[in-house]
Length: 469
Image (cartoon, rainbow, N blue to C red; front, top):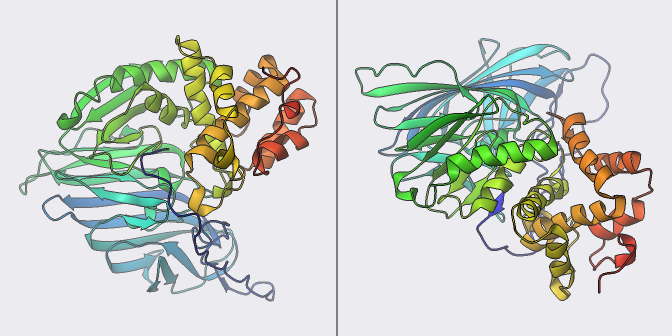
């Protein structure tokens, strides 16, 4: 993600993690936890099940930004469930069923608490269908506005870190990836885009003037990376290395978006040479809105609110397809693994395209003093998880310092190995440290401690044998 909002207040009230249920007799049915205990978002995600697939069907009226929607969720129970939660902050619910039977439900803040007609045994696959209707709007917290963003002619979605729940019920955590299908109806003069590839031609326009588009994301995806864009767009289609490249922009953003299609293809080719094969079956991008939200690496097809600001932003969001999307963080405290690598991709692109070297960029930033070093990159706190200095710049500096520490040959092998060994999975910082030590043959504990977990400038002796003058 590239944030276009200023960093907000340093302090934020944290919600207490849900209590762990007491041990029960074998075979007993217990409720799933209303959160997985993420240190920054304790109520994000839910316990007791893993989602395999989301089927999202939505009819959208741009006149009043309302939707009539149905989410069908296929999941597997991980323990005997008496009830379970979904994250949902959307409009009024019309009905809930589990395996075809009407289920009890209640809403408790962001939690949709569902009680099926019968308990769900561990290891069984079950299907939840939630029907709902009303106005869709964004949610917000101290990191900004997220989720469903209404526009003059439609809407787009940018949900990091906690906004998927604004428009569909979900296990809204980066730790639980699933495949997705979308079936979205909108007035015929509007275009509908989503993640992945078209699942056949758009349905013909009905007598009501609505047309239905179908899209499929067949590779696992975290809910916050799910995307829709509905509106009047100029659409370009092509291929890059044999995969579809679909880009679109609001006509009002034509000047800012003139490089979007071609640079997307160029960046995917260039990044594939550094990071290994592109991990998804299509690519592209969508420019919409007026820039008040963010650019976000929505899976396979990033969203650029207000249009791309420059070539580096396109390179950044596409680098996330490897670092952040395919290889995703399990916990938001490790957000530097997403943003540090994507920012460093910008530095590498500049280095190889007649710009400053990555070392020159690093050295310029290393000379900074004071507040630049105040936060811990590896655990910045929820209010600072998108802090430009601590996460983006110092995250990239950590990556570059590692490059100097272990040398180019091992470093560039590490980038490809990291992307390949953890493809479609979720990771922690310790996973990265383990791989870096394995490939380099070095003990890197003190290096990563200095760069990630100390709120002060690391000495050059930690990473550079010959200090810069």
